[in-house]
Image (cartoon, rainbow, N blue to C red; front, side, top):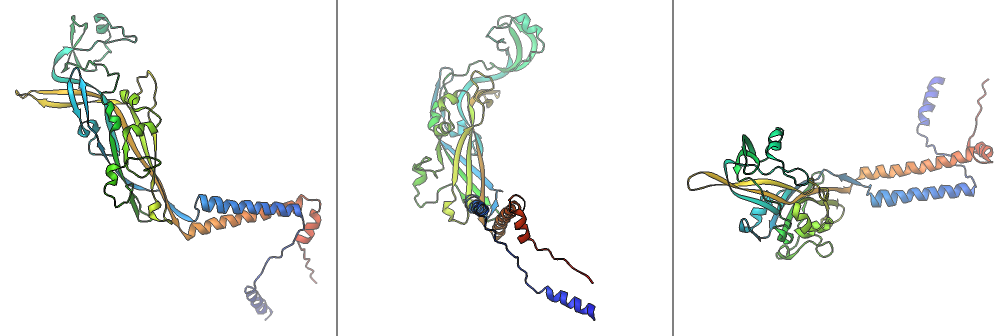
Length: 380
């Protein structure tokens, strides 16, 4: 019977509410220290966690994106070797279909009317511009032709090897001034679509306006038109810290960064991209590694059905469009976690002050007597 009464008392005790007993320590130094700590923690939670980092929001960084580019501009080049040449977007943009990475031709070497046949290799030069002799060229079996396949014959008239290649081989030097220097005034239209699947939110970088003439007249400017998606090529290079005419001679690589940081608790009109520009390749003066160039050819057939081609070695600027971003929206779970972390920090302050009072003060023994109550059980 006594055992049943004991179990009953235990279960009834579970229904009791217990609260802590607080001891007020009238120590001004500890009190000021504790209040300063509380103020610092509250400032951190409110200022940094909630205002700056928006710790009350659920975040998503898995941005889905697509980019469409379109270039406009026409220029005319006049070369003593090839004459007049009209360049439109179909000629100087590679690839022409408007992708996230594209190349703009700003300078070139043209070798027209190349046909398959036998001809002399270009002169082999050492450092300093000194040509190798015929015997020296023949003795260096490791030297491979860059333009064709060596036939094994030597041409005394040129002092070089005979090759089977597209003749005549490329021999011109790169122009010291960019032939397409007017490309500085060409414009590029960048249309960027983004989507945050977690929040089912989509948007474009094109400003939502009822004015149909806006896109026909605007040009991106950080101050006046920060949301215009049309950029002048010369401005892109200038914002990256370089001169277009200087860069156009040998080429280079420019990054266009589009950053989306969207607070979906606000109106969607406030979710807009931020643009930044930088040069990716290293600019090394008098270095063979600086610049950007490659070759391509256009093939034709004459009236006899024979194939011939025009070879282009093009120099230009490669543009890489990089999109990053994140979106945030209020959610109760991260809010509770942020508040709980703050409460835990406040508890750590109380624990630290207790340790100071219990073990580091002259009156620590007196405080321990008031803090802890010792009960001695006596058994008959």
